[in-house]
Length: 228
Image 1 (cartoon, rainbow, N blue to C red):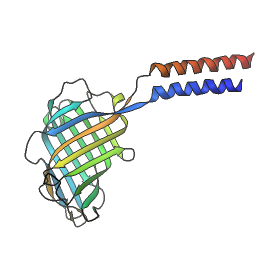
Image 2: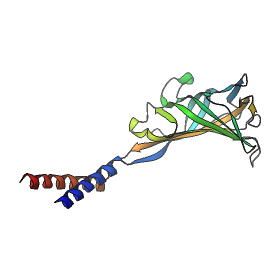
Image 3: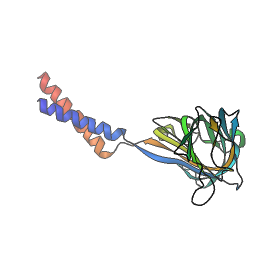
């Protein structure tokens, strides 16, 4: 009887596990339309750096919702450093940032909210050495866990915005090599592209439902046997 109960419980947990599985997917991919730099990093008194991009015209080339792609939108990005910049191996610069972003149909964060959110413990990283194609690049990347990334959307349902989630901005055509002024990243301008991903609450698989049903039936049978 104990073995039967164990088998029934195992089947029930397998069924629940199959129902709870989530698959991370890319929910948005975008790039700016302009060939000029649209992102500005400002060093404040050598102690902190702000990153801003205001009403950056972008093309969304991939989107989790049924909205056909590509389509046009506006990106707003605001972030502030939360720790000192660090130089690694003499070439790579790292600094933590927190902030918010929005991708909307209208300027100024108005209209349809395709995707917006906040982030913390996001790392800006780049090299002081030009890339193989020439020019300087950097990236701003966060994931939850271990950091903090929160998404909202008018179009993508909450069930498709679950953790683990990730957000990334790629900065290209930097106006100068990434460097440290005082204890923070120096001023630069850049072009931007990016993407975000999240896990979707999976639809219960037939096999998962079958295991769950078998397990529940087995547990019910064991309970009847014990009661008898």
